[in-house]
Length: 593
Image 1 (cartoon, one colour):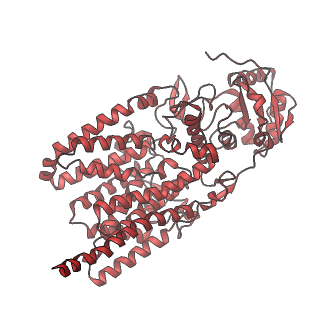
Image 2 (tube, rainbow, N blue to C red; image 1 turned 90 degrees about the vertical axis):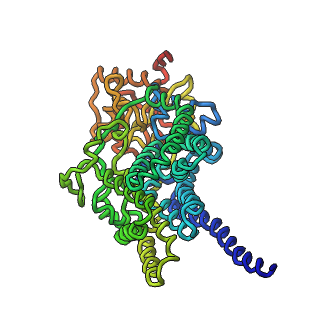
């Protein structure tokens, strides 16, 4: 009797050890791969920038600096008054990832925002992969290898790797799998309250990481539920009451916790509506679905740029064999209604990502697509359409995991073909290290804190080129690397275009005479010829910005033309710490009211 029991238990012990070993190796392998993707930035976090997205690189440095000030200086988490003086920035209306910047605030405080940024990007990739591995291995598949494949795809698909170019909000999708699983579990008897509260808390957390991802998740789950209900109406009807009750509890929980932050986001100072581009402008090209991304091992940037919006938006790019294996996985799983509904949901969102008309090889065919009918709906018009393709990428990873889990039921021949297909799909998609370029070294003016006397009495440091999207990234970087220790006018952020007349979303602060003038000089390289009236308008803008000093950033584009223009407006500059500086502390400071 005892010998029989030992014979039954003995095989279970090695199996359990194998699972435990896999559970250890999976996150380690994901972490190693994430470090390799970000290795060029890890080598010098403060001295290099991601070359495919230096604008957002600067923005997220600013975001992490703000998180540090919230925790260590008591600043308002929902609003920042240190950039875009005097109007400030509505942080809830921007992708400020408070659920990431606040926990990493000690890292930012002691090591700087640059280290926090690369750390967040690395953990975003590895954490997303491991979160999907955990949910898959515990709830959806029996094979740890299948779960690893699913996690690898979900965390390191070309979509996630491309967004690792500084998009902390999109690369950090480690809450999403738990939201999905909690939603699916709401159908279980007795889980309406407990499951609804857990789901509401997860939704709240996700809002402070990325609301766009939450929207994608909600739309995908909606499409999944509808597809499943159409195929299994009786089962859906039996679960509907329990399911809807759980959703109601989740809605109340999240609604209570998010009521004020969302109210502030949509009605507070610096709020806006819409985007600075048409909803259907950035779409998924049909050929992009089966092509290789620029950061994939088999990718070619020269070819990819004709099929992609930018280096941060390679949202599909499954590769030809990868696309084939996704189709094979769907065929293998077709009798599974849940898998079939997931595939339908992924296809629906993929088609939505293609925008109002079909685009093929960079050319608009004019063939109408379903998105054209909903492109102007509220909330839908707030997103970049091509990003709906990220949903298809994630669902593809889940389907690959589910299909891989069925390997044991395949014949030896089919198993070999499937494994070979997986290898041929995954190896060419392996990510390359993200490219970086050296950042301009900070002058002694910044490193030795020589700016401090000029920003006393709540004055600002006006860096030229002014901090703006694409043209003033160095000013943003100076501000962020200082830990927001001084205040600055303007900046790169989302806010109203020209309030109160125009509250459409814009990536720039409202236009002013001096900002437009300096932009033209930097862009075209011709010094401005200023009249007395022009100088008065420049002075008025400096007063509005509460300026204490104007500083020309060394090495700027058309630096000589900018220097001549500023000299004509403000006189001969002083040379302080390696920069040309105009001391304007004699100008009055407007009252706070």
